[in-house]
Amino acid sequence: MAAKKKKIKASGRFGSGYGMRVRKKLNKIEFLQRKKQICPYCSKAGVKRKAAGIWHCRKCNKKFAGPAYVLERQV
Ligand SMILES: [Zn+2]
Image 1 (cartoon, helix red, strand yellow):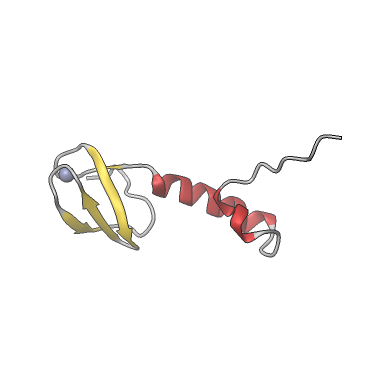
Image 2 (cartoon, protein in one colour):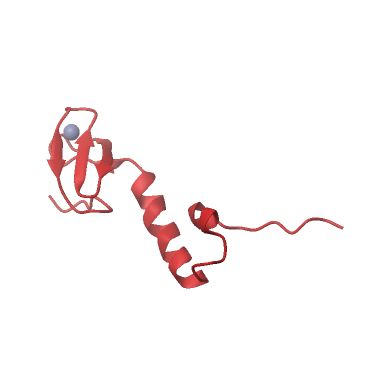
């Protein structure tokens, strides 16, 4: 009998203790968070999140404040 594989992404580390709904939300947010974001200064995808609201661009080496989770392309 084949073992049942769970399709849980980043939220897998929490187990079942938090409920499905919050874990799905978390997956969405963390997925976006890990992608490289587009820099508002040099418009290249090199921005990574350092902490909540703190972003750092590796291309132009700028550190700036922004939204907590995802850097939107809103210039
Ligand atoms: Zn930049």
